[in-house]
Image (cartoon, rainbow, N blue to C red; front, side):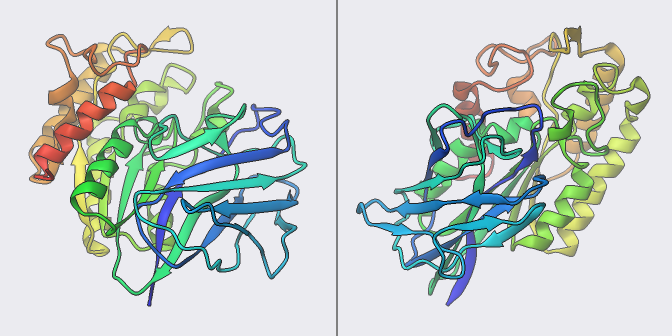
Length: 355
């Protein structure tokens, strides 16, 4: 028998969001990439100063079989303050390509350890708290067949789920019941620096990617890493973060080289992506783009294009004057739309010869 992470989503600290669980109940639906006869949930409360009480939690598979989620045999439990725990193993069969529905009841109105997903093709958050959810952020399965693991790592372009979910769907079609999927994106995350901004969202930006990635790889097995980060290292300085935090191109390239070295050390397949354009984007009511930032982006992308394992998203999505093309733009000139993410996923699949 083997155990593997079948699904995982990152959490971040959101002290600025209040009343997320005002109805005291949360329902999420997670599309399963792997089949297994049993599973368990990883529940987290990384940033909570008080234990997170769970009065009741259930999981329902596609056959409408519902089972209570327990911890040490108890259906009512607490996730420790600034802690995590695994549920008991649950004899609930799941099938790849089907939905698992998870409902939990908690009196906590303001959970501040939250995951989010704007994409609705792999994760559906039901109710008023969309797109945020709390509590279960990973599913581990046990089964006889071998499993591989894909980690998408990056910032909001990854976290929003549009391109990563669309690509995952293609992988689930071409290589069904083989891949566990982790979305390792955190909105606002930078490669070289932790969140440091006057923005109310600053606490959720997380630790620097170079600090997050080794920790994440130590927590779970990963076979393939798709890495796209560095955009926020350019966006934030002078727009909420100090201008002095704008890195040189050499510093960003050195950070990418650290990621490459980490992948070699851990024998990972690594796919890198170029930094996408952000001209005309606005952060904190100020233009985020400057000619100096664009020069850094171009220099880093030249380095990335020199590598055999880079997929050139910039070539796909940039206009002649280095803006995010309308077909990909959600409207803020920085982030992908759902349709744009689908196009990016199609490009990625074609470049990697995944039909």
